[in-house]
Image 1: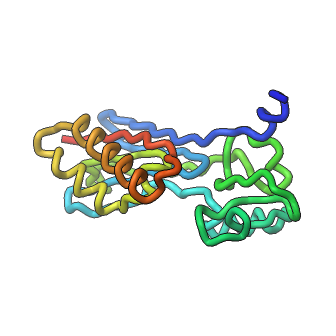
Image 2: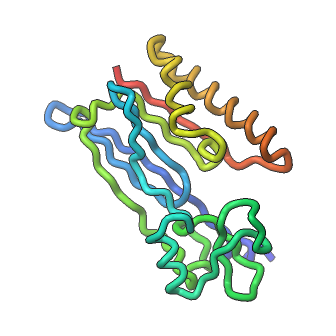
Length: 192
């Protein structure tokens, strides 16, 4: 039924606030789930600006285990992401530890409390921000994504960087996982 489907459904969230005024140049990130934001400094140093909420994160894993959740891959195989299950049951199979919704997973410790981080744009010397959904980061490293973005930075072509990053992610999904693809949403911001 539709009610049961909604009870087992949820969503991730990744928000970025940029405060740019005379007295304050800050970035605030808030997230739930497995999307990620990285910054690239003027010295091409990569920094992850948020925490990814998956069973791979020790703090997240411990909360799930304390609530009686079982963490394993589908059918205890070595394929795919770690997922959260009820003991001896084939659901919910959730690969994230925080989300909006997923009411069935609340008893297993899946929460909807976001992580909030704050950064000073000038102190961090940020020149590029890249944020994307889990499908972007699955087969692309931070370094590869930085290299793509840098190739468009001098021309101030953030749209070109977005297109190239998403096209590259999609091609890698087609090669490495031809049976499916995750969301490959990406945004790029250049600071000049």
